[in-house]
Length: 119
Image (cartoon, rainbow, N blue to C red; front, side, top):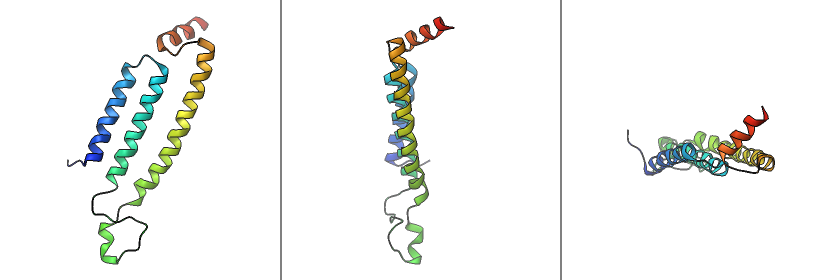
C-alpha cells in the first residue's frame, strides 16, 4: 500500500492515542487520548479523499477534468464526525465532573474501588 504522509501521520497518531488510553491511570488523560484517536481517524479519512493535484469539488470544471476532482463524501462525513466527537467529549467531561464530585478523584483505581464499595 502506498500511504500519503497525512495518512501515515494519522495512523501513528491513532496508535499513540490507543497506547495512551491503555496505560492511562487518570480519567482526564483518558478523555484526551480518546479525542486524539478521534482526530487521527478524521485526518486519515480526509487524507484518503484528497491527493495532490486534485481540484476542489466546489469549483467549476470541464467534463474531461472529472477524474481529477476530490471526492466530497469523506469531507462531508468528517464534518459530521467532528460534531459528534465534540458532543462525545463534552458528555465525557460532564460525566467526569459528576464522578469527581462524588468520588473526589480522577484516578481509575480509586473510582473502581468507590464503585465496588457502593455495591
